[in-house]
Image 1 (tube, rainbow, N blue to C red):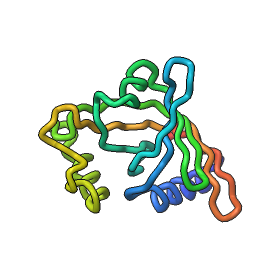
Image 2: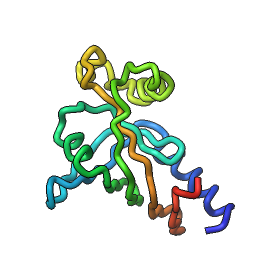
Image 3: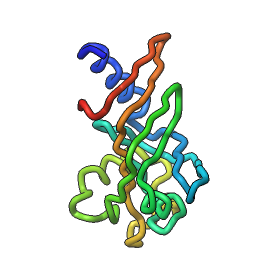
Length: 144
C-alpha cells in the first residue's frame, strides 16, 4: 500500500469509527472463540471502550491479549490492553474523549466511574481489511 492509499484508509477509519460506534470484539475463552458487541471509538490505530475489569472479556484478554474485531465493512486483528481505571491521571485525555463520544449513554447509570474496576480497554490494531466505495485497503498498522 502506498502512502496516499494508507492516508486515505486512515481517513476512512476516522470518518467511520472516530465516534461512538458498535464493533464486534472476539476473544478466546480457552480454545473457544467468544464474541460480543461493544461501543468503541477509533483513534490513532486503536479502538477504545469503557468496560468492567472483572468482565469475561477482560479476563479472556488477560489470558490471551490477541483479539479480532469487525464492523461496517472492516475486519482487524489487534492486541487488547487494560489501561486501568477510567479516572487514572494517565487516562485523563482519552477518558475525556470517550466521555464526549459516548455522551448519549455514558451517564445513564451504565458507567460507574467511582468503581476502580471501570477501566479503559485499548485495542491496538496490528492489521486490517477495510472496504470503502469499492476499494479494498489492506492496512498494516505497524507502519503508523
